[in-house]
Image (cartoon, rainbow, N blue to C red; front, top):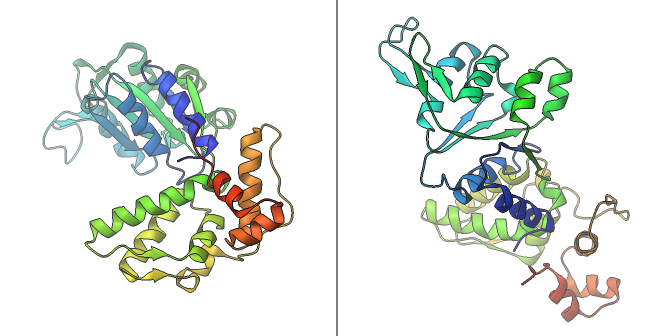
Length: 305
């Protein structure tokens, strides 16, 4: 079961995965861009090859070139042996550059040169090597804005322009929250060898209605805490941290983009009414002017056959 937004993303990925076009995921931190990048790899003809991620924000600029292209022995002080870079390690598969907007300017022309000819030299080396990789990217900030600000080279930007997939924040795809809750409850109770906690109806409703500024990452971390602190227990509203659930009430106004489909409008409206009713389906159904049976049939929204 998934939101309309996630269904659209899955459809796009299935359309482009078999093509060696660059795919860029744009969205807030914690929305699952890394999971979607791996999904592209799994759907592609390169699925049997390696999937090699690199977080561009986590590597010091001085080490980035050797991390990406590898190094020869003696390339710099402390380089006592040859080391393979991420590009070489990803040959035959997919190279995922997470936080690509943080790619150092000094490395960008070398990456562009590699993309033009699929050849590279290890740091400190003189021999050109060949690697066949498919590039998938993720970014928090639109790359065109980075180009205008002078933080990203225009020639590299135009070279990696392919398919851009916008990943909405979790608060805009609430139909994904309940499946994620159950998935993480199963995962972390099994990982830590504890009995699976059970969510009360009110706790579940509060979690579905929470703002989740940290998106899926925040949800995952919270569920792991619940598994560790309340193994096998019934999770009630008082077990949930206030910063996560906030005010259980909901606003009277519901703003929706004009690009929303009718199904999305219905999904968001029913979700808002349920949150206002604090998960009470009888109260929500009365407010909507439908029977509880009809509401149960319409929510959560069922995937189309």
